[in-house]
Image (cartoon, rainbow, N blue to C red; front, side, top):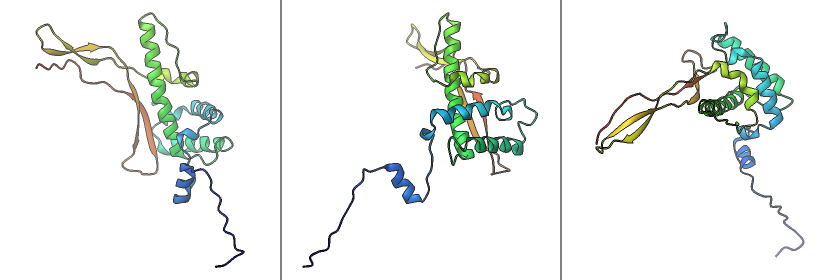
Amino acid sequence: MKTGSLLQLSIEPYDRESASNRATGSAKMSSIDWKRGATEVLLKLYKEHPILYNMRHPKYYNKGERQMALNTIIDLLEDHRPGTTTNDILKKIQTMRTQFGQEYGKVRRAQEKGGQYVPTVWWYTYLSFLRQHIRPRNGAAEIVEDDDNSYQQAEEEYETYETEVYEDENDDSEIVYEIQSAQPGKGRESHS
């Protein structure tokens, strides 16, 4: 038996993100890493670049111009969120536009019914400039049972908004996103 040698271990609490980063050799940031200050800066910069959200902008479909706008945002965000990538920005904007559309739909429906809805997300007013770029569509279906026990879908007004992210088939270097309204089919009937 050897004496005099001591093995010292230190045990640290398990951190899933750190373990993942060590395993992959990278420090990835996720959407939960967006602090309020960085989010505010992102939204202000996004508003200053209508090429990214206004489909009527003369250069909206110019991928190079859109990428330059995203690169400008990345550069200006560096102090607030180091290591931000184009993909980080696109994901954050997509998520926030989707949530904004949902909140905006609730506001509109409440107003139509004479009520008032107060949006629950703190950044709602930051994205209010998007209202003019969102075109809600009506037409939801709800299944209702008739008196003769047959079922039919009744039309109910609703609005859903979703943001689509897709890659141009001809160019893998840039991702383009748009906000669109989702609308299920109208007037379908089914009987049992």
